[in-house]
Image 1 (cartoon, rainbow, N blue to C red):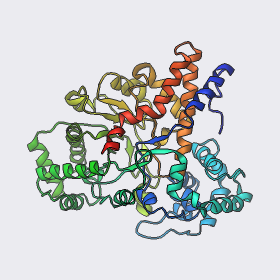
Image 2 (image 1 turned 180 degrees about the vertical axis):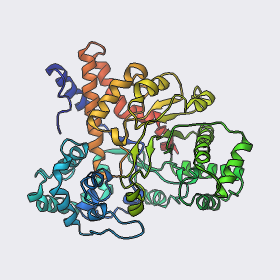
Image 3 (image 1 turned 30 degrees about the vertical axis):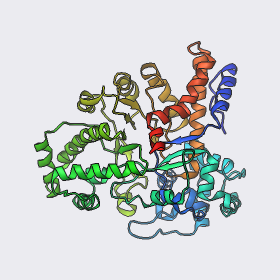
Image 4 (image 1 turned 90 degrees about the horizontal axis):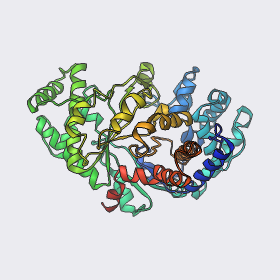
Length: 473
């Protein structure tokens, strides 16, 4: 692993390494991510190195697209169809031939550490070694110890939260429960993500709302029935082990509409008459409704705003959502969150974990907000920001105002299952280096640094995301 304490004095670097060693073997807490639960429910061997490490990783396919290599040539299926290239070895060779594109990127760091740390393959990847590396990883994937459940246990994952729509039947989670796999020391839990039935700009939103009503047994032609249906599905998610809900809105805007105003807007959306302003207003109002629901049922409320979804319209048209076509945008939090925080920000029953793709808001908005409201916590840097540099800048920007204990710990936010231990290790190394700097400056004792890094790596995310509640449920 590269030395992420390179900017430290020798004495501070030694302390950073000692701090990292103290938490390197702590269990992994993964309270937010996008691993498909069917991977662990079915526990079938991975198909090949390319389908494991290239095809589902839009960090990788996005970079290659930027150099003119379309996703279809990397095994990404077309919308409603198949990929242009389906041979795993050919896909892998294409990655190796373009490996230089990843110099200095976190994708290279994560992949190389996955090669060595997970698969024990030390051969550097390049065009002439493509087959050698491919064959070595493929041989490992054929071994029982490299099936998904075995890797889960080897990675030391204590809790892995997946993310599902309220339209999901949670069959994969039911299968895991029926198999008796997991338990307090190794759990896979779900997360309630209702965007599909909240965002009027989703394609087929009225149909999705009708399906919600059918699944929940409520009349969603009425606004009241719609809210009841969402509550019923949240109950089902809690019964399946969920401890949090997640909301991926374009902005952080919240709004307090009257019941009549919300019902009128909802009915306009069902008729197909809502415009973009209506959709934004309804999303903003529903965040208020969800805050009230979280106070009632205890689900931690996560908010992931700031992404312009499907900015690359060609990519969305040809390959669909979540294939690397999203772009960050500037995001307001001070004014956008004011209605919600005014209503519930001082209520300790609510836990609101707020993320950003706009790191310029850390010092100006997010840290002061989290440092001033009992309900609000700062989520870890995510997506475009969960890099070694981004993680360090986060600590430097927010600690002065929010401290450490108004943050929520690290989340890997990944679909790339085998990168999970690598990403957590990088975060722990960055935190170790930052804490060593504070000790070197006389702002913290070594004992306090040791306690803090254990909290950041393990205890804090367990507490903030109410994972003890999930274990008892």
